[in-house]
Length: 639
Image 1 (cartoon, one colour):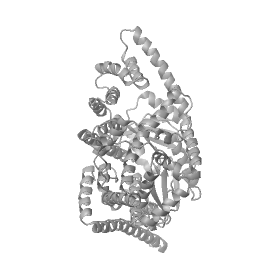
Image 2 (image 1 turned 180 degrees about the horizontal axis):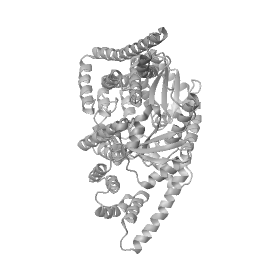
Image 3 (image 1 turned 90 degrees about the vertical axis):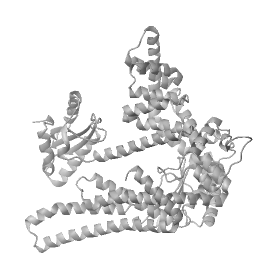
Image 4 (image 1 turned 180 degrees about the vertical axis):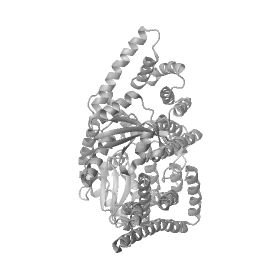
């Protein structure tokens, strides 16, 4: 199902669900049952087939020719049954974080009890605090497809630090609203079925020999169709959860929580965390107290330009099909929230400013757990950034030293060569100010107007200066080098959202989505190889020699072949296939263990010039050996 087909399907289903909500939910449940029913039917059919084979062999009525003919079918059937059973029995992984007990945070659990009573929700078995700017309900099935879930309330420490107690209570009520009105059973069940089909599809695509239309054809049709159908249900429940929150804490607190969650998330990502990580330029060790300082950052008014630009962009953003959460404008409209107009302003967002935070929800609700949680995530953050912090500091210092050399060279010479000019421009832009780097980038682009790296950097600098001409340079960079697609689109999308440029926003959103689709197709294309797809490689002789030197360190390798698979997606990025003939132990168990270890070492420890698929050659894949020899692909031999 293409993106356009998905969007059209969701739009038609949304219209149907608005007019016939009960009928829509019944159809969604029946569709889910269809998927489970198909898997059960296939599993039972394959099981009966295997039992029939065992019966024939046991009765002595099967001939040797028949046995040899059906063994591959039996093996394939067994693998399909294994894939189906794995997909059926998805246990789920409990969320990681610090579990909070009622005695530690009585105010938090008192609100949870009130919300349970008001919203008629089931029990929350665990309350977990994480280091993410988020809140969610997670349901972990204890009996696989049969449910009996453990309910987890997952709350992010930074989110609690950014909101007032009343605003955060709205967030909790929204999440708990997903458990009311039987959401817990229906949503959890639908979620597990979605995961079942995603898992099964991935397994079937990964197993190269499971090319059975009976399974794959149904999976590839059903999974995207089911995703589109239940997408509407998930979005309906977001609106219902907002209404549940408004019932608990009021429309104003719910609406302001939605607004300030978005604004403060942007503040942390665009201002607070870049400031913390920016200290690497001067400080060789990471700063301490980064989580402790978050509430302090919100005790004063946020920068007005940031608030205005972020809010305008959010309100201009339309609900799309990338996320089940509706856009902010639609959520506020559904709540009936009309913020007050200030003076003679034409729009309330021009003057909206979050009130300074007197006391954060974390301080008010976490009780005695607050300081231990802060210390835990402070230590986690330091452990995660310390290994690379000093290296980054040293790289920046070396960059500054190199920049000083290039500045002196530029002052002494009439013209820098291409390599020096590019390095001078890039270092100046990244380590000084964008304004200082623009003239240098202009000079480089005059020499090399099609250079993708220079176009990307120049476009980013222009957008940073609030010059929309940068969009054209970034678009050219993406056209010249697909590796710049996501980085370029991220910059342009942020700019367009802040400046309400809907046409350009939609254009680059589609560019990013299409690139994501192509990457998915490329991963699928490169997940399996057949002999007839192999052709002589294009690897430079020096790289081949370096690879052979690494292979020589494996005494069990007798012969090695290197070829290239002809690919449709991103053909400029070679996909190599390494075939190895190895001398391994003769016994089955020892040989399998040795083969698995060799395959692991060749995959993880050897450095390849490009992405490489590794094959151990033997009697079971003679077709590859013949193809390697036919295209003269041998690069290494001990004989």
